[in-house]
Structures are given as C-alpha cells and as structure tokens.
Length: 243
Ligand code: 6PG
Image 1 (cartoon, rainbow, N blue to C red):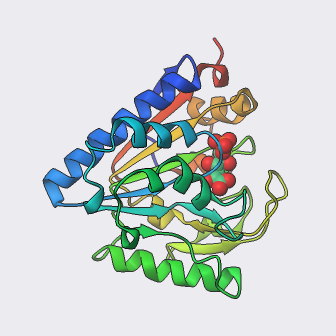
Image 2 (cartoon, rainbow, N blue to C red):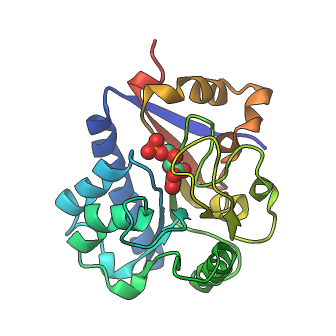
C-alpha cells in the first residue's frame, strides 16, 4: 500500500476553500467531457462548508449539475433536518443553490428502521451508480483529530471491510457527534479516480504530521489508508502543519 500524495498547504481556510472549489470544478469539467457525467462523494463536518458555498456562488454555471451525481461519503444516522446531518449542511451550503435534479442527490436513507438497514440500502444505491467496481470521479474527505476519515474510526471493524461499499458504524467515542453513522468503506473510497482531503484546524497537527511523515505506525490512523487508484490531493491549512 503506497501513498502517492500531493500535499498543498494554504495560509487559511479561505484560501484552501477557494483552491478546493477550483479543483473540484476542474475535475467535474474533465469527467463530464470524458465520460458524460460527474460523480462526487461529499465529506461532512465543518471544513468543507466554505468550499461548498463557493461551488454554489462561483461555479453554479460552470459545473454541469444535471450530469452530476452527488453521494455522501458518510452520514450521521439522524433526520435530514437535524443540525448534525451532513446532508443538511451540504443542502444549505450547495445543493439547494444550484440546478441539480433531486434524483441525482443520493442521500443516505436515515429514515430506514435501523442504521444497518440504512447502510444496506445505501450500498445498493451506490452499486446502481457504477458499472462493476466503484469508480467515483471524486471523493472528498476530511481527517479528524483521532485520525478518522469519512466515518472510519480507529479500531473499527469497518476498516477491514473488503466487499461492501457502505456499512453501519457505532457512535464514535473519540469525536462528536456521538451518533451511529453510515460510512463508505475503503473498497469504495480507494476505487476513486481522485480524492481530495480537506484538512483545517490545529488540533489535527499530530495525526496529520505523522501520516504525511509516512511512519509505519501512522497506518493505525484510518486516514493513512486512503490510497486511491487515482490522484490523491491533500489540501492542508498552515495551522495544521506549522513550520
Ligand atoms: C463526519 C465527517 C468526518 C469529517 C472529519 C473532519 O461526518 O464527521 O465526514 O469524516 O470529515 O470529522 O471534520 P472537520 O473537517 O469538520 O474537522
């Protein structure tokens, strides 16, 4: 497992978000030109919010939203109106502000009776979007201070999933919000044609330094196992990696 990462460092979250939105638009444009569609898995948390807003503000006409499939790389098992919902954040920052058809927004069905049901349904939804192996054009990801990415937490059995593309995970004990999640898995994430990891916040200094330093021990951090078959771009706020 080799990690061929391109790392770019930005002075602040504003600059990082501008560069991320521009990269996303370029990848969308290339995918649509080459394959007639663009698929993107969104990340949750707080870091990507400004990037999503910029996509709505500056790229609403540049991205072919009608040919764009939006997936969620992970979701908290809460209703779509709950403040902790990744869908809610993405809807408010981006999706309700661009002309994307509702049927191209593939939200995790958090109204399923159990989180396992939600994950099973989401696995089927994802399989319906790709012919054969998982080949999402772009997976956006974040990294938590405990080294998690998507909702793949340290020590979780979900880290060793080989087959399913979406699984249920218990509420994390290392970070908030402590609610059960549905997450995409490494078979899905590492099939991506491109991954962009957005990282801001000084509390991530230790894990991100270890991961980027390439120490063997860092493989205990789920984010270190992001080794997509395509491009891997890590966009990092300077506060995470002080000189
Ligand atoms: C989630 C996320 C998660 C997130 C990291 C980083 O639903 O919690 O998708 O993996 O990306 O926790 O979050 P921040 O960038 O907000 O710190």
